[in-house]
Length: 312
Image 1 (cartoon, rainbow, N blue to C red):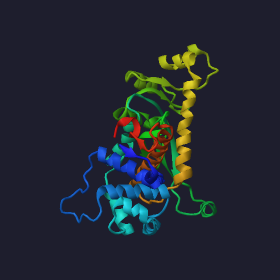
Image 2: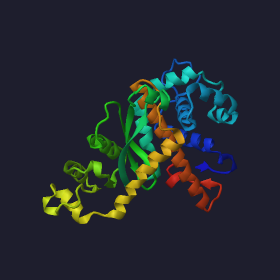
Image 3: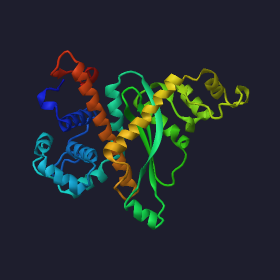
Image 4: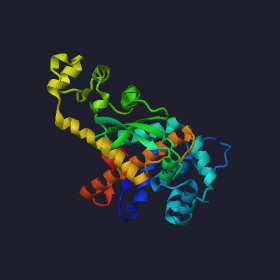
């Protein structure tokens, strides 16, 4: 049980509580090595890196923010404020696999049954100079591409695939993102936009007993001239009401970019990927807190809430 009384009204307290529960469910040890200094635990490092993305701060600015955020440091159990290089080294050291599993754990907690899945892709700008200098020096802008599979009901991200330059078409990453979604939670339907209109995409989804809903290109073309069994079926039985739920993928990307920024501060590809993974964790924490607050407001027990379907 998680108490959501007067002491849990602060958003930072809720985020720390949610992230701690996720890490506890993953059975992540507090320390990776028995002979380490044991000054900061793995849980503290991950929570601080997630909070850094939530605040959209650099490492130096985030450490300065921690120095005045005494309540946050008290809840985290920090005996001392870490140096900013400590957080940089922790971010580089922690495994990407661990972060991917943590992202998927949110949906497994919030949605115990089959999910309403959707997928889309967006780009984050690798910006280290002003837009004016980019234009004046005629520098070509580069982007890091994020493909995300999400649940349309809870708007939680359950799987991501990150690609660096050169950026390719969305459909090339579908098989990987779909496998990640299946490993987290089985969907009953998969909604995708026109960019994923391909017979092999339909076939892969249907072979896993999942309904596919993808609009067909060239709708003015006669049905008998449309190639593919499932693409013909989409021409006959396409459900607009189900498909329009896919717009929530755009909502998710919009929230991430407005709240946490659309640019990446890291320089090398490895740290760019980690930065985006921590940003997705920050978004999922933010979204989970909104869901928990909504359930708290409609709960008959105003100060005690069994956290999301009694999982905790």
